Image (cartoon, one colour):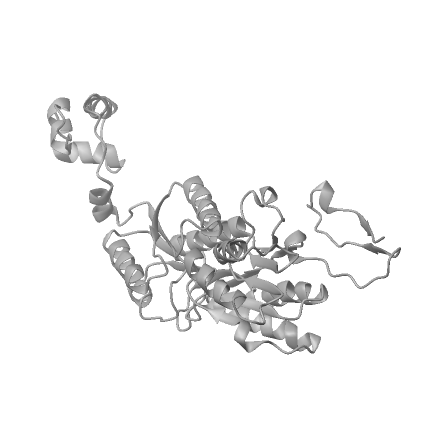
Length: 365
């Protein structure tokens, strides 16, 4: 075709049939003799014709597309969520369009408008903010929608998320149990539900232990590396620097490591570090990073399964909420501050999937 994209008219001309006949054959709707079908399919193959999915969607009201909007596509947590969504969607004959909102509500709004005009079958979104206004068009236009990781008040949809309060409390309690008292919380933007939940859990762990929170060590900002790098650096330059840092995502943990390295401070000897979401290939990092690992892949697969039920109409009931359990992975970056006497033996509690050198018994001499 000399570089020209073939059309349905070209296929009709090659097969010697009408455009309507080509449409019936390629859509699988309506009658066409076996001979006619053979002519049309052969012509389409020879011309390397690809049906226009959007045009087909206008007639069938089905695009075969699912929109997935995430705030940080380069973060391994959301990459893994995306893979879970994609695997279930593909297994059900659907394709995924991924939009990266960069934690920007205006960008999220633009993507939602685009997805609506593209007639997507449904939308899975990890919201960039807390306002229902951005997501409301999806609801008013009856587009099946599932939230993942983050909640938004006023949006009545299915949601799959972790328990940010309980998880943050567990991670903070782990550091408190190790003897750390001046613990910094490097958090994301409080406009997101996960940031608010994780601060609540951080405070809860202190309250349960009867230990005061150092308010000056609580820092909120963006979820990105550079911002966390600067915020942690400012805390480290204070006369009373923190003994430990809880980063509420793995990007901010990286920012914390950078700030510590610039000041010649070691982990965990000078400052302990723990974070949400395990980093891919974390075993390559020395010291190993203590993390609260969320089941990101499962989060994605469940979100897509809920969406499929809404699309198919097999579940038209009240919005459902699935809260998944996370796993604490205690590693050396948390720092061991044991108070036992020389010669005493203490058993180290480790996850069942810990590597051999992380398991065992510590003997102090």
